[in-house]
View 1 (tube, protein in one colour):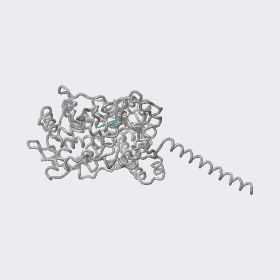
View 2 (cartoon, rainbow, N blue to C red):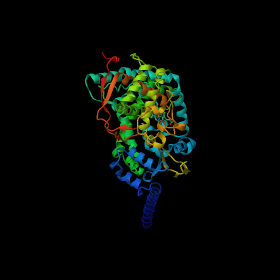
View 3 (spheres, rainbow, N blue to C red):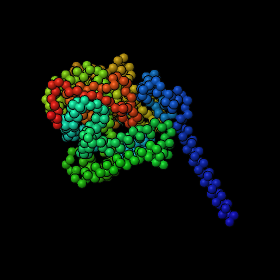
View 4 (spheres, rainbow, N blue to C red):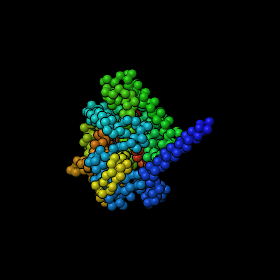
Length: 502
Ligand code: HEM
């Protein structure tokens, strides 16, 4: 009896000792990797949000800090994050030492619940396989024609009639919301041959889109925690925002599964959409779901964000709007038919204006990788293994040494030489990323944006309500205007009524 009591006493002691050891080990690891007690001015301002007294947006504060830094690189110790706006460093992390800066496990765990093994969330073999397939598909002439037909239909049969209706009713539209619906419809049709019909405003935004929005917005919040263990514990117990994330992802999963199921049921052998093409060589439905989700994420919010900022800037720069109209009239003319792919390619000034707008308002404001082994950046900054390494595209578009003293001006001419658009190095302008993981949808995105802009401004004047207030961004993976972009559209005299209206 006494021996039993001694044994259970000893087991209890041993158990408590083990638990204490684990707790101490976790604390030591947390102290070693996350010095959230850091007292430096930057960390204090981040933790207390005192930066917001002076700046409208976190990205404006970062741009200020990076402009002040002699190397154009700063470290936010409480986030374990080094942030750079130096093109040499960007080239180093995205190209020269690509293998040392993977997405890494921390990124995979932040977005993994939604993205699974989709291209945005993986490194190594999974990434190489999807990259190869996606670049073959997105680069093929057949997919380009297929995509441009879908966009043309979406603009001609939905967007223009919608604007026409708003004109007739003198209604105020949230242009950001309209572009999100347009981009969602287009990417769903291109990616899996499904039309969610979001632009028919009589219908509520589809449940899939709403759940998708919620999941991406809340997942982005995970990356802002100074102590990641907090969201991980909340996830374990399904509490607060983590409970909402789970609910939203369950809905996304349900619908994504249904999409794959429908495609199998009705056949995919000869269909043009990306999912059908992937299904011809992948049998695993979970993997197909992950691939589909990544495409929706890639192609929807980015395009909507770029178009929204573009119209915001256009309303402030009427001379740029007139110059685009002249070019569109020269090349596309007044025909009610939509611009062809070749005509869109000839719109150099519009191309430049879109690049210029994304310089000031990149849809992906910053992008992070994780440093695998200790490294030294070209500017001399030491980067410890495990550090989150971020390049800040928003700040880079606001650097005097990169763009000149008029960097704050919206001036498409800076991209034009002898009447032709001339691109910059992707490491100076990493809006579409650069190096080995450069965006695969750039051409498709530009085609879509040009189709929208050319036809909208040819037929309508779009007045942004609320004047020249500086934009405020909502938290999320992609730049989103908090409160949207309220506009009133007026039909221009002499423009033809769009399809579907009288
Ligand atoms: C204005 C629109 C767009 C912008 C600014 C943009 C920007 C970017 C950026 C910054 C990345 C790197 C993300 C990262 O690795 O963390 C990226 C990757 C990617 N983008 Fe885009 N994107 C746009 C539109 C599109 C569209 C329409 C598609 C396709 C339908 C697309 C497909 C992809 C894919 C597949 C990748 C992953 C490449 C890889 O990891 O190898 N993008 N894009």
